[in-house]
Image (tube, rainbow, N blue to C red; front, side, top):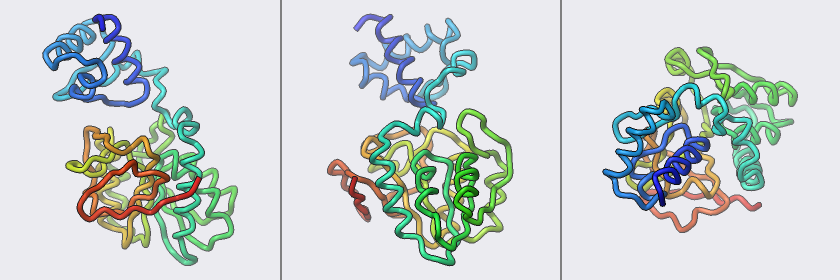
Length: 248
């Protein structure tokens, strides 16, 4: 693979993920770590990317058309996500207070909560609209809006959870790894998910099959802290693992 081909491969990966780690790029391209680091340095000089310790993200001007926003994530693995969402909703009982984060799979879950007597706490902007259409009582966390990911997420959002108790939490994930557990690509998303895990009586991570054997930059919880709802765990095994299978 030539340097230009590696650049294209890196940019395509960054259009799918907000952050890509150096070791992931080495695996994708077959290049050595020193070669990858030289590539990233050259790309940063061309203002294509911004480097940080261990990884890289798109430069501001190139991030405008990136495909990692919620609108573009919703169609990916859609049938699996709908099956996972339906299974998750079946675990919700009347009278409960539940948390839904702003992920694409939890968005599908909103439809299956119709006619349930529950209260939903969420930071997902798309969730708010769908829940209102289904006449589900909703409490919206405050904070700064993130237009691309269609969510409310900042330090204020994290701190708001201090005073809220929830029965069940349903969280999205960007990668699941034996060593790192549940991982994500955003620091505030990590803080919020970690806080929610500590406040919920029972937590579930909603993961389509593509999320297994993936590790992103921030770890928000250990495998033992939440059951995983998926259509296919792809043979994933870990101590304390609880898998709930959904049928597509």
